[in-house]
Length: 408
Image (cartoon, rainbow, N blue to C red; front, side):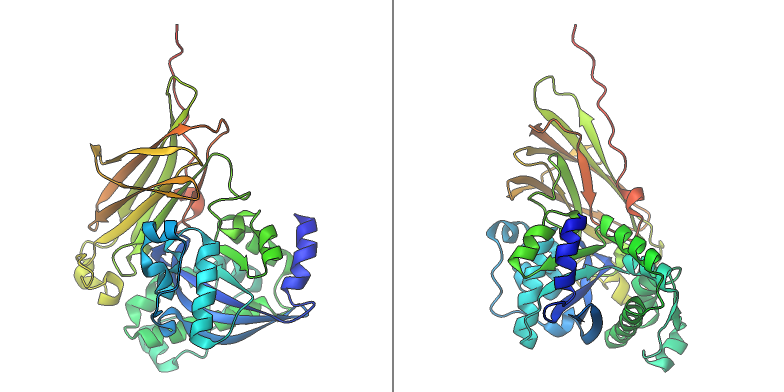
């Protein structure tokens, strides 16, 4: 790893020539497979190791792609043509290289600028970074609006997540002013990150923690660099050398068209089962709870609840739950709250994919069991999940071993 870093980092930080990267801030309040909807966008230029923040924008500003950009056929079948139509939906797929390359193409089509790579970060990762940099002032958002809404003018590791994922939407109704506050926050945090004031050791630890939780993902448009990045988990690849032999993935895509995932609590656990033959079998158990207030339909703004605009009642959360199994295995059954149900079955990179839709009113919980069989890998299974507002360790639980009765 250190050898790869010493070879890649100088070039990627503009040692030989300036590099431009598109930064996507994934908003976990509206789930996408790799984290959250890419709301705020910015371009960062790296030159001789120095970083400068350039144009800031939003996914809405990028607009609708017409004609729709071409996307891998397997993924389009699973996640629809929206992958190549809207910047907000490029990461419906959990495969970050696909999402990033599509985002790059959309940005070029909109602005004419071809960026050298795409970096994704979420507000939880920003909270880790603020641990190292200290608080930042958010001074360039509309002062009058901020004062009336009661939003903080200083962001710290303690308040940045709740502010950016909840309070901005519940206290400011106009999307443009929400974007202005986001842009100001991103600008100030980035400025602190690139200054000499940040604690270097703490910064490395913060970024390491964020990448280990898939809260920071990196893609390079340079094939030689990407081939190295693809060997590490922070590439966000669903196949290739960065993927463990018996890897399972569980990903969440919002179907509400709202910012209600801030209130969702989830756990995912692999349950090994006995088969009596040479193949392995694993049940992927996903439990979801909607913790939103019972009066969400009236106590939360329409922008947060979705206002029923996509057929989901206000306060209710609809989620597309997608599970990936290891290469060559099969997804065999789906059970929701003890009842066998139909599910969508696909293949992505020779990995089986099973998906179901879960709809929960405030206070409701549901458990989905997706069973994968014919597993040929004889290594311990491991689990990757969509990074949400919750700590990853609270979502991805330890594997439950099989309790097999030995044959006589």
